[in-house]
Length: 317
Image 1: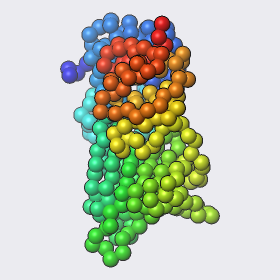
Image 2: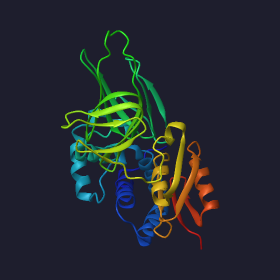
Image 3: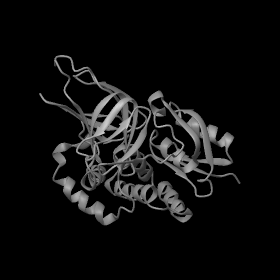
Image 4: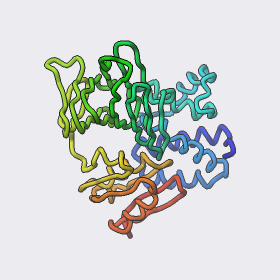
């Protein structure tokens, strides 16, 4: 893809923030479409910026242009990192997220891209499966093994730590607290400032909690600031992605589309007039366009494709 001019990139970043992180009405969307068609360079810049959507998913709502300006100054002093080989303006937005939240995964040891699910085997034999747009670091010393979740979802199956007479403790570090694994298979997920935990077998212990807090096999819970809370059901099976599917039961359409959007580049917009519709079923993630097509056949919705990277779901006329 040709490198778009700097002015178009600046405008594309501004549009991405306005459309993805702030409430946008029909007038805003219409203005965006006019900008997109105004110059070929605008379309090039939009495709380039949305193709880097992995790094934008953790920006807080209401991000302002003044914040972007400050971030551009900071990134200019770090150009030597050459983050993903991209140009200055796009890299700066990724660093806004890094400055305002714990590491977003730009420099993580292991990462997956949008729509990619990746399997990693660590040196101790631990198997880690990364969901789309996920990242983690791993570090080992003589006393312990540490997996640090940077973003997204991880399915972890601890290894037997061959070479050590007694397996070293396996810690999982998250934004909301550290966990000690006594489980053969468990999942951790960063979502909306909370950490979702799901255990298949064994149990997890929250380190440093008093009294000790833990979650058993077959259970789910949310970890927030070192405290376990009951999981709030959304209708989404948290294990579904490990089999390459979204499995939903009476799930709100806006929540379903937000989950689907994690697996495709660009923007997937749910209009207010259909957000309360309910979705049930199992949908293959290998073809997200097919999932959208199925929704249009089973629900009273229509799909508006502005491009492969800009899809709006709204009510049928």
